[in-house]
Length: 63
Image (tube, rainbow, N blue to C red):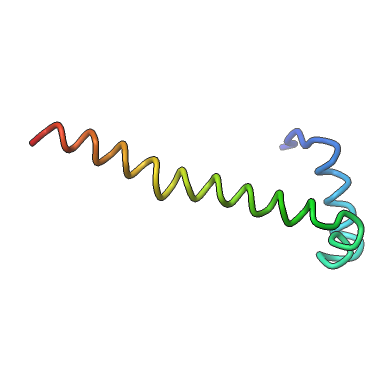
């Protein structure tokens, strides 16, 4: 099964396959770290803040 990947992700994956994470950081620099941090910041905010808030809000109405 093939998934669509944007062109910049494809180029980053090829750099990673050729020389590992260090090569990727040498070529692309801080962009990789910023994207990685932003992804996990958004993901963790949804999992640990937004979903529990809505769950608590809906249960609060039951009592």
